[in-house]
Image (cartoon, rainbow, N blue to C red):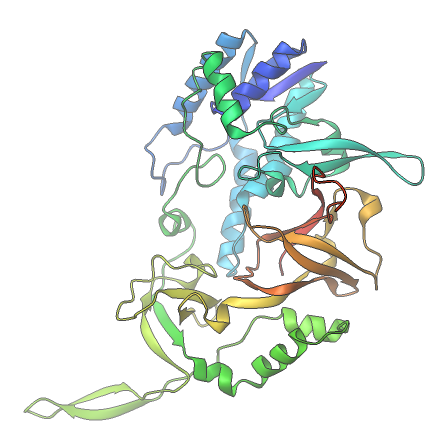
Length: 435
């Protein structure tokens, strides 16, 4: 088989190429450049050039042809522009998931096929397997990688059958330390290279600076929400009641629970007072039992739910966390402590058109439910939940409230493991963008 390896300069893709070469395949490497700009990046001006240099050294060491492809226009149009648009609407996108769907297994795959490749291999820690469907057809399933600390199936949750049919994951059955050991034994130039961090192909960034390339900084208020708001909120009491109900919830009830809290009723009036020995007249905000203005920020679009850093608000015994943002009013709402009530929700919704099933046979029919396990961010432990499909979308009702359910992020659904098989690997059955 003629296989194109997406060689990034990292140890994972290097070992993937080496293993395929050892198996006797006709292997060639292709390095893709997806980003030119450096504004907001934290690792210097030409990080991609170093990656390309290492990738070419690896290809020479293994003895395989090396190609270079510039996909920066596609990446900007299909990933980065999407990122800017989502942040401008107060949502938090996951560019790494989009990069795999739109670039690695689409634009890059097409370039590889033009060069005669039968498949594309990457250094992802995940696996695929062939499945015999009930109707006699066959499909590809996507499974977690063996290494529980490195599984990357979440990042591939948007792939379809056509993409999976052309994808290979040679290191999915290995642990990270095994990959490092293979690279060291083969004396690969990438053996000791650190894992990449930050936005896929952009690198580690100062996010507000990066986003300010297109999004304007505008000062607004940071509002701290007190427990008294929840004590007086009929919506919160209703949510508590529904979440504890030991019954199947209606579509209307699930839709209600999936909506974020609206803190817009926390308003502040001013009052006049005299200060100092000269009794200078000044104004101040009247105390509000529901919350207070805790500080200022440079734009609500630069913050995401659950965020702790970057608030620059002191005077608290415990750290503050972002619990909501309002783009229209340019407000950022925060709560004190990791147990703040505003951090946790039990239900999320995915618009019907945003749901993607890895295997079409796994799709839920309208009105049907199934138990599964779900993760709403990379490296989160799988959480028990019930999926229910309705006309207004797919609802995920968690057994336990989840912290910082974030619009724009992807929720990935995994099949329940076989309790009789301790080696049964969770299958990723579908995903969707959180509404």
